[in-house]
Length: 124
Image 1 (cartoon, rainbow, N blue to C red):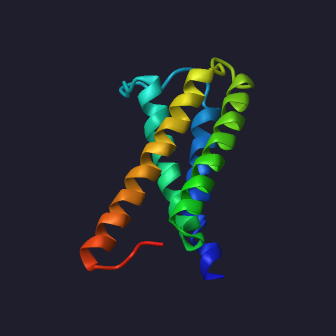
Image 2: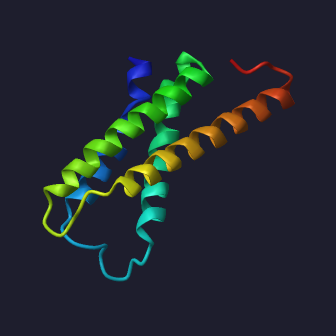
Image 3: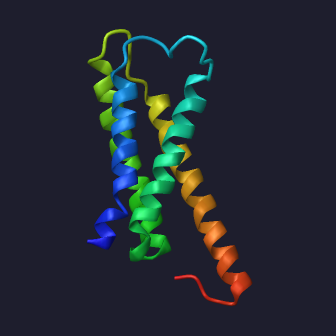
């Protein structure tokens, strides 16, 4: 049960992404974030949350799983956006999604690895 709870933040964040993708048209007034940066950032958060959820599998497996889930969810998100008025699907958005997830996973693994080295423990 404890490991299942680790997945809740990632699933909630996926719901937030779905909700944001369901909104017609461009970003709300007052928010001026370039599209690719927004995709990168949103999926970086998802990648880190997925890595945390899968961490009991080991750093490498968690990293791979996090990136793969983000890539698949990104494809589904782009397809979903095709169905929303004022939105489009764009392969470059999907690439930004994967890049954000991969960057977050790499940074997360490096932070864990550096922390383990400082403590004199070998990261798994």
